[in-house]
Image (cartoon, rainbow, N blue to C red):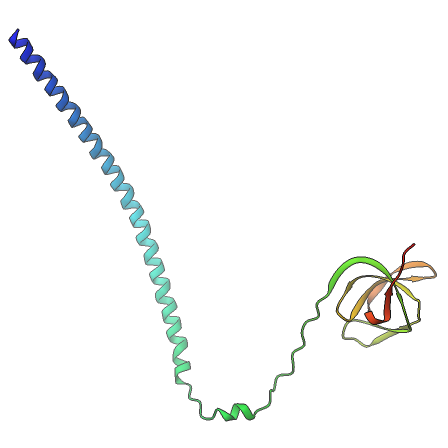
Length: 172
């Protein structure tokens, strides 16, 4: 009986020891996998750092080559620039064309019709001539069509009229 009791106790101790060894082996396997993954991630980050360092070196080299000519410039006389007149013509702001819902308009006086915003006069239209438009600038309105004998005709070319010469027509 004693023998049996000693045998059970030893087997029980041996089984606990086996479980502990299995858990240690499992932990080591897990650590090895984690180590491999971390090494792969580390190599990706190292490559990324190397490419960024190379880009930085290239950018620094470009900056150095651009700075050298600037450093070599010697300004003899600052007043020389002040005495010169501006050789560039005054720049005109680009005209902003705004769109709106198409409407009918009427000339409130005899008006000049222009070919485009910076063009010569094409026609002289009489007072009360009706036309349509859907675009304008601050000073001009584009004519998209006009009424000839109460029949609307699409404008065959670009036509502009001064806004001050027009009034919005009441459509009935």
